[in-house]
Image (cartoon, rainbow, N blue to C red; front, side, top):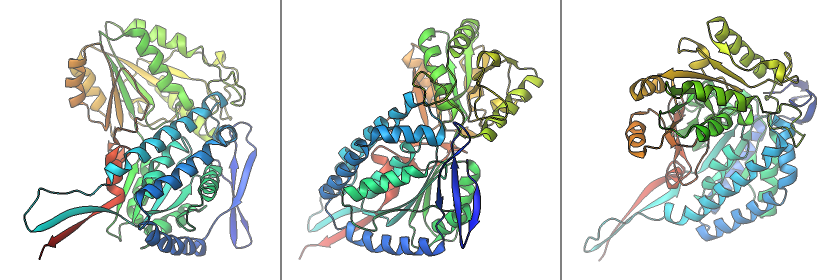
Length: 471
């Protein structure tokens, strides 16, 4: 992910390549097995003390850390843009999302972590405590570097765990910002630590017997690597592995609302979102009008340098990713698809660079990889369907199951269809959004486990029963 490894003495240096201009944005020395050992030893000591700290005090620490992060929000937004290419006009939204999620998790922690008390039994006191699992390793990605990581970091610490964060080499400054914020909040030493690791050493980290839970966001291949690494231990891993998220526009949908939101859902962050819209099914009665409006709105995007406040479509994270999407588009066209957007309308889109024009494909079907495999880029395919049954069959014809959206004015019908869709989240008349009050989870190759909501605390704690006979 935008990295160049060079051997320097006994350690390697990793370089973050900015997709804006292809230059080196920052570099750092990779940690090694000795660093992992020291981090985990310190984490174990710190966690034993932290779990005895009352929850209200833990919340106070995290509130201070959050305020320290938000105090640097302008600089952080610029860093996000420079590291991974999202338009500066949109990067600030990531910090707003981080604040929303962090505050919600702090708000619900007292009830989510409260003891479970069964019905009264004369002569006995009985309850179940939710005790921390111990040391949580978090492996975070670059595409939403704060939003993906806060889902694990804040609830893990609130629940009484220690955290070791390994962030993407594309966005290493995110880990530095967290570390600085927790230091400013005077979080106990060793409780939150960061490591810069190779893939091999990341596997060694999560395999270490001192790690008690793993939170991973990334590719399906990466998810399998995490599972393999922890296979020698009886611990769990939360795996959020991406998607091929569909939308269905019913005959009674509000056309303009569906178009506006689905264009944004497909092309925000240059389509580099696990819950971005990658395939759309439209009822035949709306199909022509939908495609026409969708294409016209897509043509209004401004592709360019993401540091320009007028730009709303930046480069992809690296030129290899853009070239992959170009190849998927070309392959689909060779199989009979029609590309509805002339790339010449976006002069900044050039082969061999990370800059890629948004593309809308019609005359597509599920024999094409652009409709079945995750593209993670600014391209979407649109298919015509005759009824709900055909739409549901196509939506479920996927190896993924993260989110799906249904666009309709008939909420009773939407509820029936939502029950039939094989996915972790069903949206109605919106898409591409995480509500911290709801469980964030997926099925099939989208992974397993859950973050956010009260349920997000469950994997970060274990039940411990207390059974007291009164004498």
